[in-house]
Length: 331
Image (cartoon, rainbow, N blue to C red; front, side, top):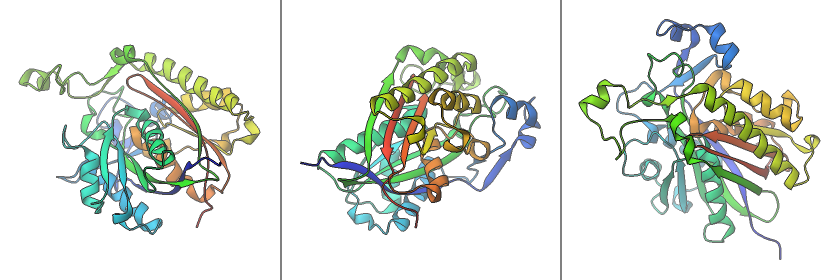
């Protein structure tokens, strides 16, 4: 009996209109376009500026485009999983708010928090709901408003992040879909990448606000080293496990954190530059949204049966890779 697979049958995305480029950023902190491009590869990033709007707004915009492009009735969607670390609030789940904004009244929803690996973890979760036969229409959305937790007086982190969201539809198939996955975590990495305050360990106080502890903290060198190693190792491992050569890969879809990391992963996989999805230069690091935003950006270049490897690394530490076969031709 042919097993059920989870296929991506559509993708929608959204980025805010406001563009924060390196020139403007260099007037805010001691940095320059040359420094940012050499070390990170980001030219500009999108920032959500509108008052009263947050991550659920970004996610809802992406989901609405997905529903439109796939001609899906919102009432037919059974589950929505939102990957985010910048939820509108601690509760309710941002996925609940996205469902409400998009009319998914028959779906249940929840959030997955795995930082920059959030979309990979959420996609694997959605895959299992499809493969079990429990659901036939599952939306997985990666959405983050990183500007809300970025310290724009910290030159080491503020050039990195942007805001955005993208969503995919998962449906059952017996042909092309998600083939394999490898996921990992290491909680000891917390000391290198975290946000000190705002949780139950350090609830908000005047002292935590004054100490700027509600912004993201990162030890760049330590994170860079582990990210390069883990993303490279897991991508090569999933290729070997599925007997894939570099010639078999249509695209590597890497988390968009740093061009030097992306280049290192591609070298380990022995693939060419034209086999790598890259949009870091225009969107920056949108955390859980980077991988689905790449799929959204490159959708017209994908064809049914293409082999893709999605890979990421994030706070936690978290990392992973998913091997999938693209399930449809561009419209």
